[in-house]
Length: 103
Length: 233
Image (cartoon, rainbow over all chains, first blue to last red; front, side, top):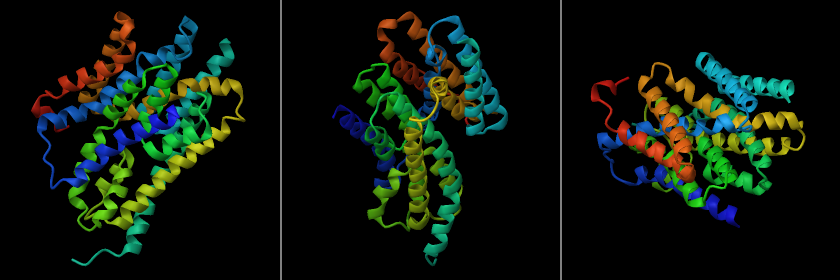
């Protein structure tokens, strides 16, 4: 039940910003707000990735090292290929090898 | 000006949707796996993709739930994460003159980063044939992927599943890094948020569940004052 309520709430807060601009008559967005909103995806992704990704497997040096290595490989792949699937595969491949090698 | 032919509009919607749906299928498979490892029921996990339909925020929400973060924080975080769709809808709204008003709420549901990218690149007015096809197929790809990922979770080897706990973050990297090429502004914003969040986490562990929100809002507030002449990157 709690899950249902949470999903309903998340659906609501996600849907409303998508809908509201269509309801008004030619909404004008202040420049300041536009710049604020521009920053959101970058800030969000930056804060999402760090620091939690580093401790995703645990707090030991081997775990943090493995996570960092996988992230680094993913970042390089993403930079040069701009391909989500390849990035995910590359990072996962390294993660898999690391775990098989060190655990 | 005559109304564009609905048949060709639907075809264009289809063409635009194929890469989006394919990409969504793959990413959503990871989401399906994630909710399964997190202990959600099939209905619960699918419910996320069905009703929320917002990539990164779905991952973030599930991840935060796993960390025991209070629902209020999760809800506000998802709201902030998806606020940019407001800008996207605002950009599209003037082009929907040919759409019956009654279909607009349905169309609005499907506004995401990727569908917006396709719609914004299209020339001319946006018709219901195009938009509904684009949005529906993209949504279907996302949901099919979620289902597939969830079901696959039952047959994948343990070491692969464990390696994929990192997958969530790899996905975020996959989303963020390409957008930073030739984008100093984005890079500074992302890096600042990363450093700030990490700093809060280390210095104020008691407030760790709010750290994310504080870091994001602080960086965005400062980002609202980015110098004008640099905004045209």
